[in-house]
Amino acid sequence: MRLFPLFLMQFAIIDAVPFRLPLTRRSFNIATIETDWIHSKATAYHPEHPWIQEETYSTDNAAHPPLPHAKRTTLQNFGNVQYIGSVGFGHPPQYLDMIFDTGSSDTWIPGINCTSYGSHHQFDIQKSTTCRDTDEKFYDVYGSGSVSGTVVVDSVSISGYTVNSARFGVTDDESEMLQDFPADGIFGMGFEGLAHISRPTVFAALAGQNADLENMFAFFLTHEAYLTGSELHIGGYDLSVVGPNASFHYTPVVKLPEFDSFMYWTIKVNNFFILPQSIDADESNGRRSKTDVTANICAPFCYAIIDTGTSLISVPASQFNEVVTKITRGLNCDGIDCDSVSIEDFPALHFGMEPDNVFLLQPQDYVLCSKWSQCKLQFQSTRDRWWILGDVFIKTYYTLFDAERMRVGFACDGDVCQGGQGNNYGDNGESRLLTAWENAFFLGSCFAAASMFLFVLLLNQQNEEPYLHQMVAFLGGLIDRRANSPQEFQIQNPKRPLLYEKNNHAHSASFTNNSQTSHYTEAR
Image (cartoon, rainbow, N blue to C red; front, side):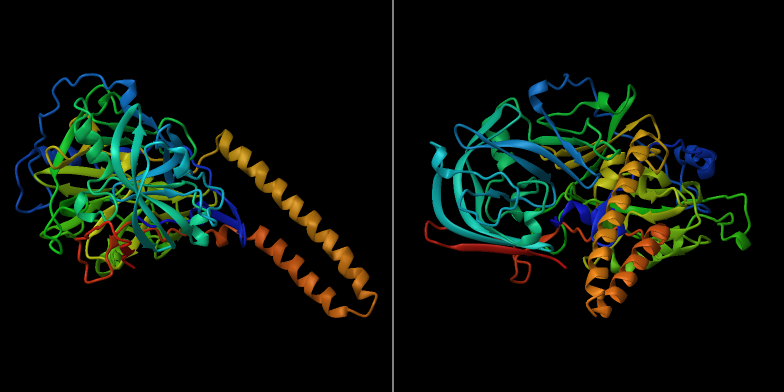
């Protein structure tokens, strides 16, 4: 995963002054996706419509014991960007806020000797009676910064369960951008083949030392920013969070061709279509006319990594422009940024996964809109050759990561996985609150600017005329930015989860008792 400050994902009225776009639920007209087409998926293969496949579902959803409260970890939703939970390290446990990242496998936290930790909590080795320093050094490079420190062995506690002699990193240095990271550290939940510090991974060791924990976990992520209710379920799952008729639809985990062992939670997407869309307007109004289903962009298949450490959906650069162009065809868009549009103008997306599952994303699942009729696709380009289905997808479908059976399950409430769980901009209490905050900030900014203006005016009386011109230009820019703030909306999310060793993607690492340094860097 790529670490980055929370404010980078939020919209800005004035440069360097962040605020977040309020979101709310809005009903979606399923007719715009042609309900008849959806139900026709249950029929046999149609030569004239190759996107229609016979749909079968796994019946491996027999009555499952209720998930004990002890197996639930509450996650905080930070602006729909990061989901953070508490983990205890050492004995007695010292609790830190962690991101549970399926796109990496190592676990690290800030140490008490770290002098560049920002506002993060720190782990004090001396206060743990069970901590052992291995003298191994590590250096991890991410797209937004780096961390370095020492590998230790100690106990780790989560949801009332404890693993002894777990390997994790304790940092003594963090780059500046990582100091603004909302979480204290990363809890890697990928496979051991990707790990350099935590071998075995902390979660695998946790499941191995607790007989009542299966080697599986599930994520239920809320859609509304800062809304409570997100959970990590360990050693089991709870389909009741989805609905009364919920069941999992499984797809097998596969190896990426670059590696000879399992690294990421990788699956195969056999087909990706942009579905038919009909809008009651003509092309002259900048609206989409009735279109047909696009060709399969993932023929014969695409590799996709299911990653909780990535906020958006990442598409390989070789396919990104094609995907965006077909999604926004007929709309007033420049890349992923669209103007004078509404959420209903966008099509539904079809993801076909092995063996024969179909999952839909509705517009409200993958498009973010403002009240100024501006929308942005929650997609990003990646230099890698595989897709990354991040939180945008996982929020839509409660996701089970089953290491016991090497599969990923997506839960649907009914026979058809229709999506439509996301949110777009609406007028609720949160939006009104933020509007008041924005106005208060603007008034405060104007007051501060006026004070500066008076100060500069005094300087001007002392023949310092250039200062006056500069201040007038500043005030003019401030007012202009406020008036035109919709045109300046930007979402910056360069987050990518994939970590590699620097040496030709080698994925083996050896550890000794000597002061050995292990390091990896993120693919750019």
